[in-house]
Length: 181
Image 1 (cartoon, rainbow, N blue to C red):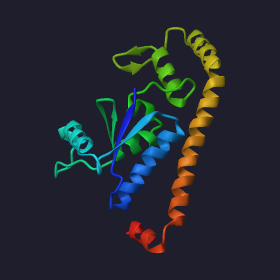
Image 2: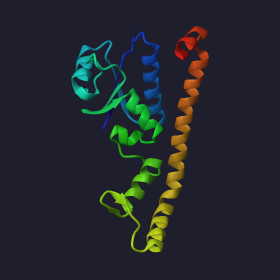
Image 3: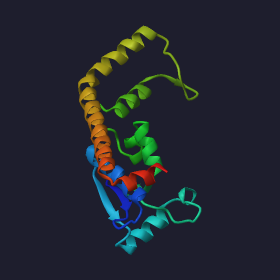
């Protein structure tokens, strides 16, 4: 599955450029395969993006702005929903991809899959000590991979944040003041 990121290579908006850089930088840091599709130079890309963003997700003027993210033909979201998923450590779920083994998302999914649920609510099993031992034993099998993957994910996040900070420091003072307004 390839993630499609629709962007505008020649946008005059610094806000759009920063959002596009944020999305692409984070996907690269996580080593997610993606295809950047330019809507500024390719009318087919622009029309496809506009037609495939769900009506309820389009702005009031009806024209969605980049970046817009898809998993093949399936709409994932725009920058705001991507940012929310990033903050919630749920980027893989947002993208419709399975989390890599050992990542925080994989560990949380594993725990949720293995806990008893009644009426949509997680409940304690009948034998708490036995359930806990089984869960701990299974978690121990994941721990080495989990630690490695979570370290990689944290390093990727730090890399993106460092790049963002570096980009802000390199801006002329007048651009920094505009963003602060």
